[in-house]
Image (cartoon, rainbow, N blue to C red):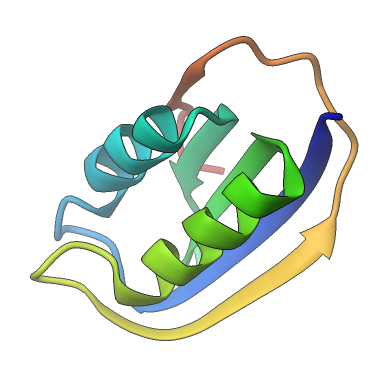
Length: 92
């Protein structure tokens, strides 16, 4: 069963390879969706997959890549946008 969740990651998460890292992590976990920077300095991520995989991604996002300093990860239910695979989107 596919479930969709939106993640907002805050802290030192731009300019540290977070998006590239998130694409790699989500693909390895087997999730669909996308990631993008936000104008406010946070990172937004839509992940679609099974609940256990979403939990695994949430735990990984709380750590992020070595240069990141994550201060908060907020999860919320989202609509499945039909994404196939996982990629980057332009800053919003």
